[in-house]
Every structure is written in C-alpha cells, then in structure tokens.
Image (tube, rainbow, N blue to C red; front, side):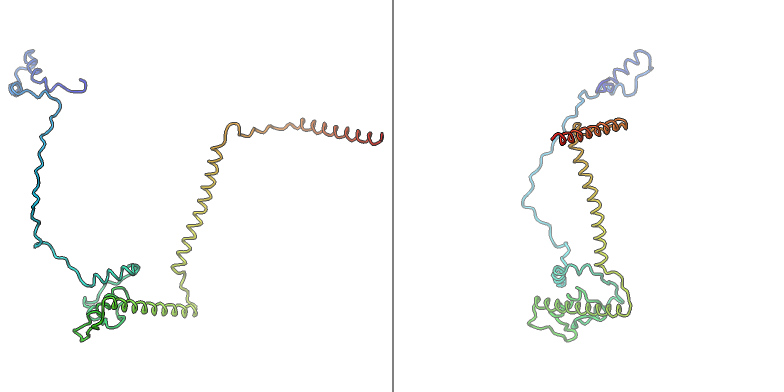
Length: 266
C-alpha cells in the first residue's frame, strides 16, 4: 500500500461494489451519510489559527499588601548573624536543645559571664550582649548609657574567649593528672586523622608506581617497530663450538712458534 493508506477514502465505493456483487445483502447504516459527507481528501493537517497576543495594560495596580504576612525579625537575628559569621566553626559544636520545663531561659542570669546549668556557646554570647545593651529592668539591672552594640559585642566576645581558655586549661590539667596516675585515653582526633592521611598517601604511592610502569610500557610499545625487534636467538651446536675452540687453539700455537723462530733468528 505504500507510505499512505487510502482505504478509508474508498470505504463508500467498496461498500457499493459489495452490494452490487451480492456479497452483502444491504447497505451499511452509514452508507448514505458517507456518500453525502465524504472523508477529507487532504492528508496534511492545516495549521491552526494563531491567536493574536493582546497588548497588556501598563497601568496595572499592584496587589495590596494588606493580606501578606509581615516580616518577623528580632534583634537577636542580627547579633547571631554577626557572631556566627565571625565564628563559623561554632555551628559545628553539638548543642543541647532539650529543656526541663520550657522556662529554663527565665532562670538564667546574664549579668554573669557563664551560666551554671548550660555550656558556654555562641547563643550565650548573644544573650550576654543583649543584657549589656538593655539590661534587665524587671530585676532592677539597668544598662550602661554609654554602651554601644560594638562595645557590647567586644566585651561579650572577650569574656567568651577567656571562659573557653579557662575550660581548656582545666581539661588539659585534668588529663595530665589522670595520665600521671596511669590513665590511658587512646589516640587523639589529630593522631587518628594523621594516620588516615598517611594510609591514603601510601596507597596513592603504590597506585602511582603502577601507573608509571604502565605509561612506560605503553611508551615503549608505541616506538617498537618491525626492524627494531631483536632477532631470535639461535640454538648453539656443541660440535660447532668444539671446532671453533680447536681452531682458535691451533692459531694461538702457530703464533707462538712464529714468535719463537723470530727470536732465534735474531
């Protein structure tokens, strides 16, 4: 039938021939309708009508902000952004987010450098800085009128450094005292990391040596031609080697006799 199938176009003609040849007794119900409305003769679909794009109005009123949620911001957000921007590794320290009754923060006294019931962390620096800026009027603790955000940040940050240094010294002394009494703490994190790096480096050296050997083999095979191949070694004949040895010995004897005759003649 070729590329196109024209049988649907000839369905009315085919049905008429079948009735004329008595192969079917009556016309199909659709015979008259297809005769009045024959199938389309065009096999290619026409392109649909393209809609014209209407010009949009330029003076369109923006939606009202009445029903949009308001932006919620706190003063602590800017202080946290500044502190953790200067100390990004503080975010990697583990934090305890559990509370006893949900009102633990109300029992903290930020007039002190550190709190007895919570570890020293970045959030403590933020709360300490807020106390230096605003104080606690409920407890009669008024702020310094000359305190600025920069001064409060510097003071809270220096107190944080001093507290951390004091804790590190206490841990180091406690470890030394324990080791003096026979305690063993195992390898430190730095030692474990160094061993892992050394192991990876040794594995890389083995891999690099193998790669160098492969590269040299490929380079040697690249410049190896037919003429440069070494000739096959011939098998040595024992009888031929004996004949050559005897011939060399006779030549050596003749040379010695000739040299002695020359000495006698002189």
